[in-house]
Structure formats: C-alpha cells, structure tokens
Length: 116
Image (cartoon, rainbow, N blue to C red; front, side, top):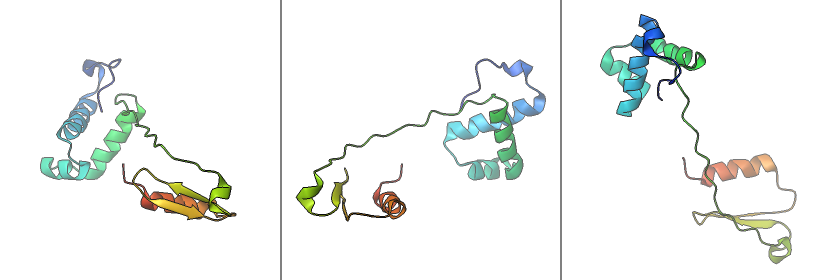
C-alpha cells in the first residue's frame, strides 16, 4: 500500500504519520502485520486499528486485486451422457450429473483450485 498522493504527509497528525510509516514499512518488508508488530514492539490491535483508520480516511490506497481468468473447455452434454465434465487447467477433471447441487460444486472447485 502506498500513501495517497492527494494527501501530503505534512497535513497528517503526528499519530497518523507514525502509524502510516509503520504500515508502509510493514508492506515494504513483505512481513505479516503480526511479525512486524512483534519485531517493532507495537500493539497489534492498535496496528490493525490504525491501518483500518488510514484506509477509511483515504490515506492508504487499496492494492488492485488481480483477476485471473482460466481457460476452460465446455463440451456438449450428450458426449458424456447425462451431466457434464469440467477439465481444469491444472488437469483436474470434474464430472457431474444433471441436477448437481451448485453449492456442492462450488466447494469442489475451491478444493481443487490452487490458492492465489
């Protein structure tokens, strides 16, 4: 996260600057907030609260979430009988029958998809 360009550090309060510096350093090191707070002897609850406050005030910008598209192949249902087969990019093949519960299917997709 980077400080919002529209807000200058000089216009921030001392506390805002203090916590902004820690949030930026934490992000720059790639460390978790827990590890960074422990290493810097910061109160973890305050660290989380200040990061949230700085976000709400627009002082921090949220990183853009990347959207990953994956190529899937859809084949006619009659080729597989009743239902369908879904082949994932990682080689996983899922075959479902007609009337498959969408909630169950969603859980299966989450289980076989690589974590991003």
